[in-house]
Image 1 (spheres, rainbow, N blue to C red):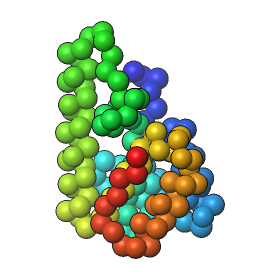
Image 2 (spheres, helix red, strand yellow; image 1 turned 180 degrees about the vertical axis):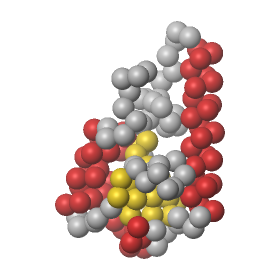
Image 3 (cartoon, rainbow, N blue to C red; image 1 turned 90 degrees about the horizontal axis):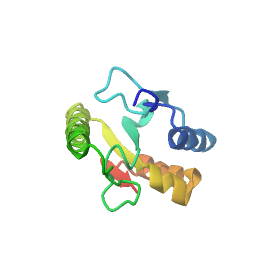
Image 4 (cartoon, rainbow, N blue to C red; image 1 turned 30 degrees about the vertical axis):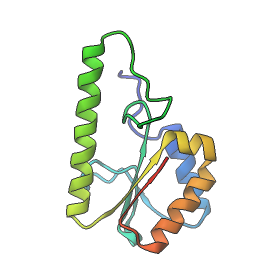
Length: 133
């Protein structure tokens, strides 16, 4: 698993480019915030996570399959990931941050520009939370 990227994944880079093209400016992977969000829009007090469907268990997504070998390891790994995700979201909300989750499959299926447009609408509307997937 050492070869698995934790940041700058293809879906993340595509979404960042689309947001930047739409005129949004942001910071990346802020260590000052719980969970080190992939994209931080300080002007909107918003944090965006680009979740991989496999690693973060996107419910109902075909990319969230469970490997057949070493099932106990994977069950524990996925449970810890889900627990960490929940803890990070709670921490951000307690600090007053707005949180968005953009799923990898949505960026692939709909395109980064469409997901960025939905994020832009959410940012401007002032909603507390959004999940795009």
